Length: 445
Image (cartoon, rainbow, N blue to C red; front, side):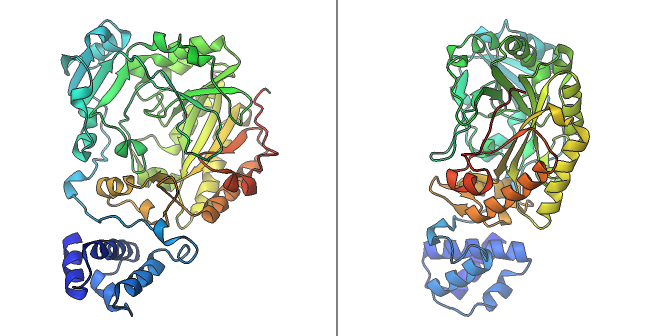
C-alpha cells in the first residue's frame, strides 16, 4: 500500500519535492486507514493542488480537534514505511530461552542455579560483558525471548524516575531488577529503548539492598519515601527465576518508613503469598480498560486475573495500588474506563489500596514508527497525538485534562482513601484536575 500511495502521489503532484511528498504520503496513509477509504478517493476529493493547500486540507481531516489550535510543528509527519517482517508475534508462548548467557561472577548465584533447573534444554554460554549483544534492530527486539542474560550489576542499582523536564515530580525511585519483558504491549517504551537483544537479569540482589541510595531517596510531592521495581522489566514476571521478591520483602518489612512497590501485569505472586506482606509493601498492577487490554496488551493476564491476584495479595497483608497508564482515547473510552474502575473496587479491598496513578498515552516521537511496524493492526496511533517540547507525542492538554477529570470523578465516587496522582504531567494539567495546593499524599493510615 505504501508504494502504491507513493506512486499515486508522484503522478498527482509531480512538482512536490521529496520532503513534501513524504509529509503528504504520511497524511494520506493515516487518513486512509482511519476512515477506511482509498488514497485515490481521498485525493480526488481535495480542492487544492498546491502543497500548502493540500497539506492544510489533509491536516484538518487527520487532526479535526487540534488543527487551528496546535502549532503546525506539533503535527509529526515522519516517513511512512512499513516492513511486514517487523510485525510482532503476539501468540502466547511460555518463556523458555534458547540461549542463556552468563558472566563468570554470576555463575554461583541463586538466579543462575534456578535457571539451570528451570531451563535444562537451553544452551548455556559464558560471556565477558553485554557489549557485543547490543542492538536496536526491530528484528532482534522481536526475538528477545530467545536470549536470557544473567549478569552481575555494578552500577545501576537505583535510579530516580526518569521524569520529563518540567513535570510535577512524584519523587519515585526505581530499583533496576532487570531489563526486558516477554509481554507484547503495543505502547511499551522498551521497544524503542531497549538496546540488548534479550532479557537481562542481575544476580546480585544483596548488593542492591546494601546500596546507600536506599536512605538518600527524595520524596517529591509525596510525604513518604517510595521505591519500586517495574520500570525496565515487569516486577514479577521473572520472579520464579530470580526469587528477588522474597529478599526485597524481608528487607523492607523492617523499614516501615519506606514504601516498596512491585509494579506488574503478571499474576506470578507465589513468592509474595509465601513470604507475606506488610502495609509498606505494595503489590501494584498496571491496568487498562478491558478493550485496551485485549487489543494492546498481548500475552498478559486479563484485567480480571490481575485484580484477583491483587485481592489475594491484599489478604496476605500487602497494600495494593493501580496504575491507569496509558489511558487511551477512543470511542467508548468513558464507559470502558468506568467499568475498569468498578471492577477494581468490586474485586479488591478498598482499604488495601494505597495509591492510583493516572497517565495518558505518550511516547518518544521515534517510537511511532516502531509501533506501526510491530503492531500494524493497532488503532491507538489513530488518536490526535501531538509533538510536545520534550519531543514526545501526547494528546492535547485539553484532551488529557478531560480524561483525568472523568477518571478522578469515577474513582472519588468509590469513597476511597487511596492517593490519586498524575504521572508525567506539568502543573498546567495538575491544577484543573488535582490542585497542588490541596494535594494530600499522606499514606500513614
